[in-house]
Image 1 (cartoon, rainbow over the protein chains, first blue to last red):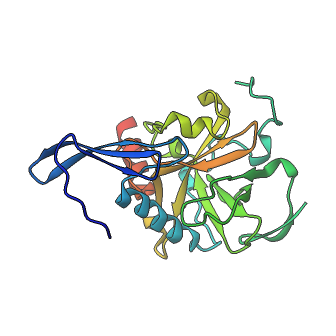
Image 2 (cartoon, each protein chain N blue to C red):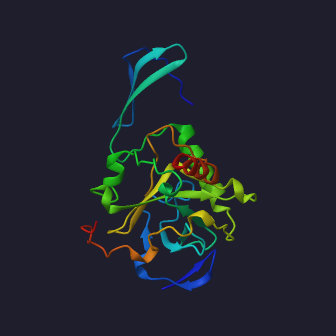
Amino acid sequence: MLILSRKVDESIIIGDEILVSIVDIKGDQVKLGIQAPKDVKVYRQEVYEAIQQENLAAARTSADLPEIKRLSGKKRTKAQDTPDSGDTSQR
Amino acid sequence: MQVTTKPFGTIEVDERQKIHFPFGILGFEHLKWYVLLDASQAPFYWLQSMDDPEVAFVMIDPLVFRPDYRLEVVKEELQEIGVKEEDDILLFAIVTIPENQQLMSANLQGPVVINRGAKVGRQLISLNPNWKVKHFILEELAQVKDEAC
């Protein structure tokens, strides 16, 4: 891993298009500014990993589902009731 | 079309239930095509991979147990699946059901959004830190009922 020392208002450039700046440092917290092309997604690592982990757990759910009886009477969207392509005017 | 599913075996599914996930689901980025099915148990849905019968997610409309839930995500990420206004979308949360089903939870931090006209879906990351990956559905549902009384 490359380790660089930077001060407030200094930056690093990754590749040709990604700029990471140190905006502020307060105690043990560093505020970063990130400039990247639209197709480069920037997420906090722990959030990204938490969702990934939760998806893996969700995929292990058995096919045998419980019924939430208190809700079964509620009106629900049918999976096949979505309008055809292009028809987004329906409210 | 015939689709082999985790909950129902091989079944006939209407073409209109086919949803493209160009970015996949986090952790399952290699799977891009799913079908949206009604579960036999309300109020759940199945998001079944067309490429891997073993990969299927249970989903719920988050408003069913959290009427205060709002989709707060990066606008560009919605535009990338063709969403122009909120009316275009179907909103879901992926449900995890452990052995003790009382502890079933929904992931409100990574909501699944489907552009219902274009049939394109995506899992997004909520910008609101109050929404977590584990919201216990029955517990929060009980709170909603209590408030209503």
